[in-house]
Length: 378
Image (cartoon, rainbow, N blue to C red):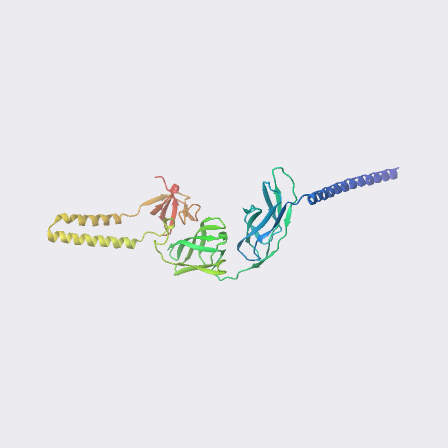
């Protein structure tokens, strides 16, 4: 009796297993049939787009931005758009998913931009799709491409990691940072360039203060802190127009004459103030002697004015109160670099002001900028 029970259970399990297998096979068969129908439908659709590469390089440099232009012909006159899917590209970063489009009487010229990231790279495979107002489904057109020859640079140590059509300094300024270092602030413009890659070697500290992120025409405000012993600072970039390295050189002149007030970090030169006071005192002394010998007291005005000027120069710089937790900025710019945060309330010497910032001299004699809202109200 027990034996018959187990034989029945085994038979039931076998039948159930066969039914599940049949169900799974039906699902797989249905899925394969659906894919086969989709492929068949796509093959039966009308081809309406014809495209080829109008302009593209075969040889590029690692770090370069280059363009690729497709020449596309549509057999459908009235349509809303042509879209592209980019696949199977290696060693490149696509900088625009929607192409820049030009049109003549029959053709569309669609341009894409790419940044070369790797030491080897291949252009993407383009799949073009036409869209119209009736939502008609057309056959997709696939364009096969090719691998690129990538040149990897072997630069000197002064290379700033920039590959561009041009890189030009707009202005610059050197000022004292501390007893051992100077700080250089410079702004530059570049064309066809990935400025986010900018980096210098053999500097104490460096950073971006602001950047206009456009690969075609970009702008950079940058600072570097260097050894005080250096008399000039230079770096190089790869110039695509000249097909070679170009050198950018900055003379180290601690002066107020080289740059706009936005990056005016130099503290007041007290030696010049003392010289002015000496000249005014000498002029007042000569005027006094003239009055004594000529007995013409009307010339007292030439004594009073220099003395008043000396008194004005002798007035100490105004102190400002800085709040606890206030950020001390390297430059008076939006989202600038913070190099110190106050851990208590400070009274510091005011050196100047510009827009929403006040320039202060810290206790370690460094110069920094504080936002107006971080100044104590009383």
